[in-house]
Image 1 (cartoon, rainbow, N blue to C red):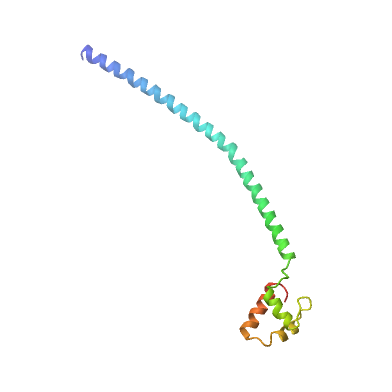
Image 2 (tube, rainbow, N blue to C red):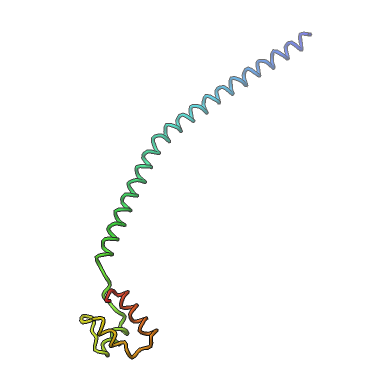
Length: 126
């Protein structure tokens, strides 16, 4: 080999060493960033999980409260037209009994009786 080829090989080897050193530095930076992200995730995830658990508990409490209040309150109102129709037959909401309702509905068709009774049941009056 001649001197010029030897110089070219030496320069190429030096450039390869520089590139290798640069790649090692980049790999070290990536590893450091990965460690930082891992530590941040380890810190954030439990906090986020705790927040989600807290919100879930609040939602379950609210659902339980709403269910309890819904079971305690019953609807005691009728549409005005139905109250008027029953009043014409002598049946008031306060004195509503099954026999009185049946008597009041005797003049209606079967479909109408079913509709009125369904509405009374929805209102919580039957």
